[in-house]
Length: 158
Image (tube, rainbow, N blue to C red; front, side, top):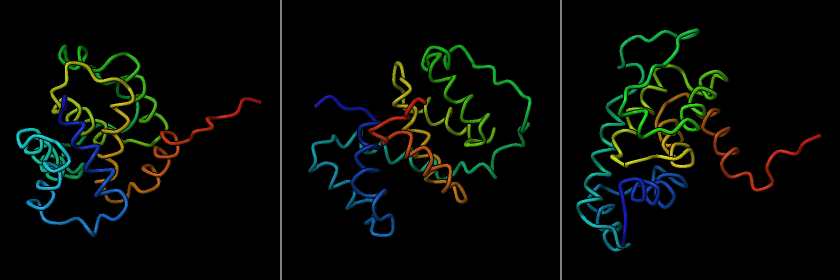
């Protein structure tokens, strides 16, 4: 099975965290469940490391960042992994108030930590959703993004 950290994270999110986060078992049980589902121990370990880093990096622990009017300049490695559509999506989320500057930085950090050669906008949406899901007080933003991601009908044009 060709897998990456994002595949493991999506499986965890969809099968354990999303429906009932309180019912999440201990890490060993989760890892056993992932291995039974066909994921390698190496990738499951990397996914748990990714989640641990996310839990440790709450926006309140990030250095102060400007709120409005600042322009994010991406490093070369970020430009190679995040295409123009993904960067535009992040800008849109920040301009509409879905993400603050600190949350945007956390999303970029977690996207880069996936170590994927390239990350399309659909992958980035999942990273944003996981970051928002982990942030206290981001319930409305998380719900909005879920609606955008899972709305089968799309927006109607008048």
